[in-house]
Length: 504
Image (spheres, rainbow, N blue to C red):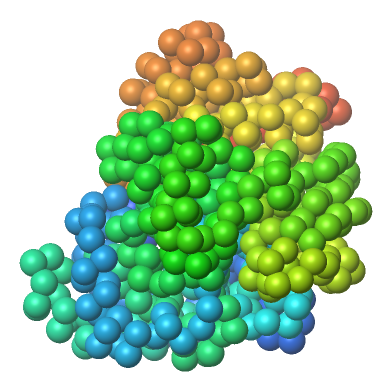
């Protein structure tokens, strides 16, 4: 690959080979490659970088972290589950119910949950609240999932938190029909870490669904529902209405529900649930929304209508209309948390809001990792996410020619995903990531040929070769042609591509 960083660090290709070999048999969500040093946010300062931590520099700490990862990997992964909150509730009960020690904002939906959670976190932090954020999956490091004050917890704290709860995890394992899963243990770790800090408010993203999701042992003051579309249909249902029924389980009595724009049948389910539990509803397009948006250098300029009034001249350093809508949802959620629109009618301080949005980052979401040619990473993995990514990359970059690199999971609607990109990809390079859930490149290529035609499809089983091939194709038009590369299909693919592109 051309234009590799010139430094004394190990060759990224060699590191990639070693990590893929070591990770192949591990849980798919622990197989995401960890790499790239980042300056974490000082407790009293603004966020720096994008919050993606490196492996621990201390070899002993690194070994201890890998030991914890291995222990977690021996449990059920996030895609294998028994739909129940019984085990996590039992564990938290003997831990003293740490999730009751702070108020929370709970986020469900199909797409946009992590970006929305990061925006909510940034807004709350700007108002001097100590935050805890729990999101999934991670891009590169498992410690990303649990954040305090907008920074992932340290490897040392991650290890300590696990060791603190491990004896109790073993007790519950012995009592239950099934052992606690990977996600259930991580959820308990997050809730315990937030209580130990302690935080002023927790921002919690569901893992999957809502009603039986392991996170749903909190009674959140604010329930956020990002756009619902078809994904995990084998677990959640085959229609937006069925999926909404499962996700509506996070709406609790007397809460405020912040509802992004939804399919009509999904919205009806959410509104019915809100009536049943006497929750207050704020709907995008009615009580709040995006009044205007313009493409700007490095992002977009927005005017948002919140629950308390209008917020003009908001710079958001993220690309795409979908991120503007996520911003509107995040603002309404924070307003609702502060009582705006119910207890009092006023806007929050506009300068604080502007500063908070300007500091937002969302790694792996329309993230530029190289120029000449421009390489963009986006973690879209279902048709709705692909459509949003296709619109965003077209609007924000206007490439004269765009080459796609796609490594997808076998359990996704791959055809629908590829069809969303067919109008904008001049060529597509199909590949795979290191997860055992990854679709075989030849199988992916067969579907891609049906969508794009054989002349537009290239197969490169290794991700590093796929990136190099795509960059070469983009460079064929010349240095000043405006060609680009979009890497997409999976969070794992994006995480591994970040390593290969030297993000450090």
